[in-house]
Length: 297
Length: 245
Image (cartoon, rainbow over all chains, first blue to last red):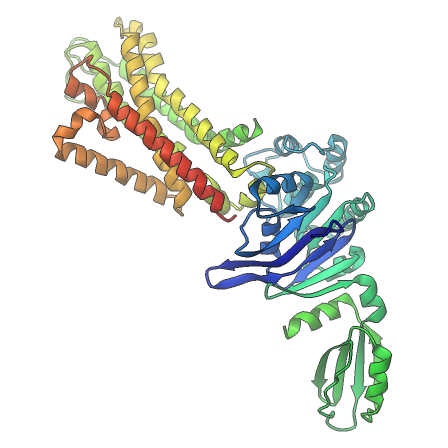
């Protein structure tokens, strides 16, 4: 496995009884980049993250995080020492106060930065003596983020980090993640907020039914992905495109819509031969690419 | 160190309630002792011939429930309970091994159990002079050893069951059933009684009724209980290693 990747998995599989939550997943997350991890509910994002951190055991396959195998208990300890993680639930020990939880968490990490913790506590307006059980969901999310961001980890893994945050706090979070990436921290985060991913991610991995459906750089999406809409006078011809870059062809009334991941000009040339009355080529957003990828998968 | 703090905070309420109940039982038993008829607040119609018999009957006999039930409840917790509270992910993300998580919780529980087992032995000799009586420290120590050994078994049983069983009430209910079963076996096959293999009766001085007051401690039974506790702890560690968050 390569040192170029902070996370690398090979045929990683997790079965819960007969249900395959993650299925032969081959994932690569490049170091020092921000990678978004997208998928529908139940696609296998959280199970993948839990396997990476040794919280659940893979049924099959292997993987490394920061070059260390995830299925070795001792190496997994070192992984957790070097990775900061914010879970999906954001449930924290309700019986502790904010100050106690910060003190508790800081004792486990050598890379803890007390000044960063103090700054974030002030920024997030978290009262030290308040019991965690009395915090709102948004405040709990902020506290969970503080516990991860007050460190200087090599890898930051976040599972739905902005869940429960108001727009201002979300902005602050995106800024903080961008700053972490600038300090050479690799950021890997799952989210349903595609606009957020689009803003800060360098790459996106899309997972569906536990399998990797797409691994794209945001530059690729912006430069190469196109939606080509062909309008016809009557019913569109039942033509099959056998061309490089044609990801998907859909029919909607008198229109044929092609999702092209590359080679858009050549595809348009071929489409002209079909006697289309109109041809519209438009860049695709991440949302569109995501929907096209997961819709019929 | 901070893991011990976490384990302490999670069991704090159960432990302090048990401590208060046990202290109240001891204090009230001693303060309301009536030397003229050998009875007291909690002795009902039973009458003891001496103060020592009274303490044995009331504090260590009837009062055993104030120790048994907390021993069961102190054993509860662990990854399954954390999963129900949605904090398992937070705990498992810490850079500590699962053995250390389990071991710390077990050690803190045992320390709390030791304090509970010691409490009657501390309070009884200290408070007895207030009712113009005395209770020998050696006897209090003997009961401490017995309570702690059998209490460790009950705690370990509950600890083990809470690792393997789902549901808040399943583990304590099963633990109680196992103890009742042991007591039933003990009363059915009376030739087993001298071995001290029934925590429910032995913790209340059952072994003494066999060996006679001041007889030898049930070392065989206590050793078996400690060995069983160690086996249950080791199994709990192994099972926790394989549990998913």
